[in-house]
Amino acid sequence: MEAKKIIGLGSPLLDIQAEVPAEFLEKYGLTLNNTYFAEEKHLPLYEELINIPTHSHVPGGSALNTIRLARWMAQAGQGQVKFIGCVGKKDKFANMLIEVTNQDGVTTLFDEQDQPTGKCGVLLCNKDRCLVPLIGAAAHLSEDYVNQHIEDIKTASVLFSEVYFLYPRAELTKKIYKVASENGVNTCLTLSSVNAVSDKFNDILAVLPYVDYLFGNEEEVEQFAKNLKFEGDLSQVMQQIAAYEKHGQRERVVVCTQGKKPTLIAKKNEVITVEVQLVDVSKIVDTNSAGDSFCGGFIAELLNGPDLVKCAKAGNYSASQTIQHEGSTIPKYAPVKTW
Image (cartoon, rainbow, N blue to C red; front, side, top):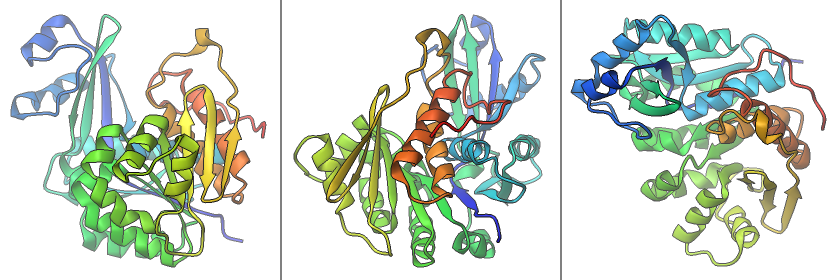
């Protein structure tokens, strides 16, 4: 039997991280603990960062992080986990991104456009950080390229994307989810951030009928429910979101993470609570990728069937491992299945 496949869709970025002196920040008009979407004056910054001998570069972007973690959690083979996105043409940053994504076992289905490859400068100074993202080519995935790979979408077991991707490509995302849903693919979408939930509310509603699994943390889910004018406690509004208009063969499942508090999973007439195995505080290094990582573990376990408790436990395990490393680093060891 052919191995089950996961396909991701989103904005692939190259995260370039380096320790920099305060003068570097001043030169580009940056201050720590802030995010600056790159302007013209910031463009030379990425070249400078990769010329710092101690820099590191890894694949980035929320959906790509989830897909890389899913590949690790599933211990999936070559060609089993793929990611659709867009990078720059004949661009050395594109080559770097493809190389490190492939090293993580993910097959890159990357369109190429006349835009710079998406990247994010992660500037570290005195244990604080400053982020300088440039979305670039990541926002320019073409419908023609998607059509060339439509069989990969139709034959996948799981499709995963992010609300962030609705900013540049809402109509295309809706089309992809409709095709996937009509072909029985487990369709998964993460709410991305509280701001994204409000900014892209109408676009989320357009895609939602084709979404089998909707992920978010408590703030994102509560904001989405508020936008829908649903009332009640978190469990109640999750059930109302699960009951919202739905096409395809499955009932919708809404999954809400709450940090170290229990994970909640709602169908329209049921709520399941899954306890979180806590990590010793002294071992926690970086919680920024915990949500992406949870989704990765969940969808990896979904390949084995829709046992929602097992999926949530796998998600929590994946997140518990990621938070013990810097960024969305893939652990060097195999996951230890305890669920």
